[in-house]
Length: 286
Image (cartoon, rainbow, N blue to C red):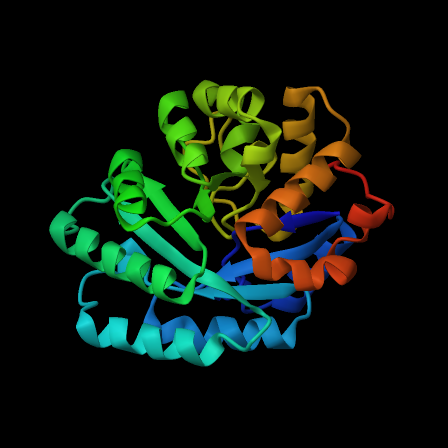
């Protein structure tokens, strides 16, 4: 059984068929879906989704792409919501937060301030983080070390081997999704193959980062197809092939890793991941 450790199931792309999408994921063996918030306006949305669908849990945070206009008032809202959610078993961490130095026009200084303040919240409440690290691996990692954050997931990781090792040494797990399915993504595939198995988790970032078999070109440069959490099964097949291991071994390892990164998932292990206690693991075919 698989867990999608990063899926925006609340996104508008899923409005017509959200329940069917989650059902299809479960049919593919995906028993858990982590839904991170991106801004104050969807805190209530991701919480409600997680309480409506037993396959989902949620995180709260402000995404760097939502940083324009997000100031102290939004941070105060986040803190109140986090405090109110601490007794909610479906609340698993702070995210999606981080830095994005790829998209033009974002204020790097403001992003960094907002990210650091959210890391301080994670430290205050002893919560793990779900990290956005696009073109910002060194800067994101530096703040983790500065503020002493040692648990969470660097999602859609696409850095060097040395950068990856620094995240792992800091206690982070690294998320791999659709990008690893492209033969052209040599650096990502090397990381997926060479890093310790205990450092890896699976994800989709759905509806984004569609895998190779859904992409509209052979190199995956467009990613215009809608991705869904069911595609974790195909990502797992590719990951298992790259590492030369069987699906059961990968399923058990990535579930353990997800729980290590997001400890509140442990409360759902019996219902979400029976494979951890010897249950049946479904096929990884996409």
